[in-house]
Amino acid sequence: MRVLLGFLWLLHFLPLPILGRFGEAVGSLMFLIMGKRRRITLINLRLCMPEKSESERRAIAKQHFRAYARSIFERSILWWASEERVRSYIHVEPAVPQAEMEAGPTILLCPHFVCLDVAGVASRVIPVCSMYVPQKNEAFDKLLRHGRERYGPVRLVTRKEGIKPILRALRDGLPYFMLPDMDFGEKDAEFVPFFGIPAATLTALGRIAATTGAKVIPVIATYLPNYQGWRVRFYPAWENYPGDDMVEATRRMNAFIEERVREAPAEYFWTHKRFKTRPPGEPSFYD
Image 1 (cartoon, rainbow, N blue to C red):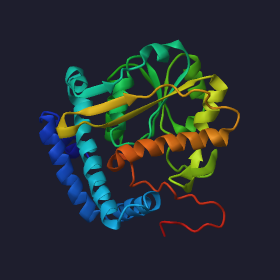
Image 2: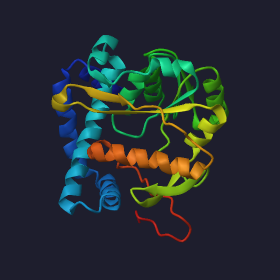
Image 3: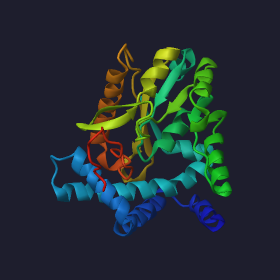
Image 4: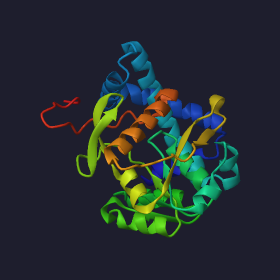
């Protein structure tokens, strides 16, 4: 692991276009050799984009592996390059809503696109709160924490700690950087459509917003063309959210994410078993 981390450290000296192309080359190799993840990706794309041909979906899958591998190697920039250099690669649209974030409880909704760490960096104009998954490898865990903490104060919360530290952080004025669009099982979830497929989806976004009165501001990071860096877009705060119906609020979240995925389909995290949890009596898509 230390050899790998040393290699990643060396990569941050490379110009971004060279690093990006290197990552994409590795991603093409990963697509060929990682049969299990390739299969999951193709199943997800068949479910979500039946209107496309198999060759079109396979092309998206290959592009996804390239984009994902590129994001891994480009993290070396985020972890070790000067903050001035990092921010020179980030194009924010229309602007970081700092005044809104400071005006009251705020949830920054960040779906699982491969450049999500860049969205986290762009959001760090004030202290924030974020969920954190401790890593088994001590050196890698230390590196990930370094990557999260180097841009200013951040309050990291593990899933085991539950929701109370998050509510406390929102009351303390820290925006909560939230990534709720993965399959975490049936607990605290509802089956709502994602690309027309019932998907076990956490209702936490609506519940936390209702409990704290927090506004929801989505933020999406994607690649700029020609290896110029990353585009981070902050969307207007959702109006009349969450309302009284948490299922409808969760459906609204999924519908928003669908729209963003269609804009950059290769950059969404397709290797995750998004439809692993099925409604009672439904067979698995992945067996």
